[in-house]
Amino acid sequence: MNDQSDNFYLKNIKYLFTTSDLSKLPNDNLKEIVIVGRSNVGKSTFINTIGNNQKLAKKSNKPGKTRALSLFSVNDKFRLVDIPGYGYANVSKDQIKRFAILLDKYFSERKNLKLAILLLDIRRKISQDDLLMIDYFKKNNLQFKIIGTKLDKVTQKEKAAFKKNIKQILDLDEVILYSSINKFNLLAVKKIFLEYL
Ligand SMILES: Nc1nc2c(ncn2[C@@H]2O[C@H](COP(=O)(O)OP(=O)(O)OP(=O)(O)O)[C@@H](O)[C@H]2O)c(=O)[nH]1
Ligand SMILES: [Mg+2]
Image (cartoon, rainbow, N blue to C red; front, side):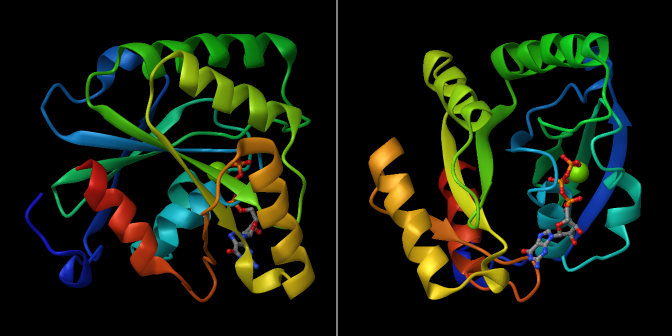
């Protein structure tokens, strides 16, 4: 992608469609970035707010319910993919299993997929499910980046505890902390996109 990060606007984000049928995904060369994380961490909101388009939310924001992939086109140059999070209570075991199989297929076979962004709530400890996800990415050689969310809600103490947790458990020195409310660190998020496009 040629755009420089500082003039790379994420203005034109369009909702495309939601599907649980991988054969319905576009057959083209556009790259995809999937947003992953526990239910309620802010995945749908993240996509909606980086595009500055609150209306997008209605399309994908049925918490934990739609066991499917939602696709968004960004500037007609790449796609963001929203998926329901893990840990949502009102989902049957059967649904979870079917969706896990679907995701595994998407993660391991989809050629367009270049990066997974794993969102972690800065106020919470990294969960067992988060660790399983990271393990999965490593085993499948899928590039991933971690972004801490809900920065607007945290105290300095919570921020420091999160960074320490990330260092201790994942051995990462740097982690981007983002807020969908005030878009603090949006530039750093955009830089991640650019790096993988
Ligand atoms: N204060 C604050 N609230 C946020 C932020 N991001 C998301 N939220 C709120 O967190 C709640 C959950 O956000 P969603 O975007 O629906 O979470 P999700 O990860 O898509 O959840 P699932 O679809 O269930 O997996 C909503 O009430 C959002 O408004 C943020 O950066 N700051
Ligand atoms: Mg969601």
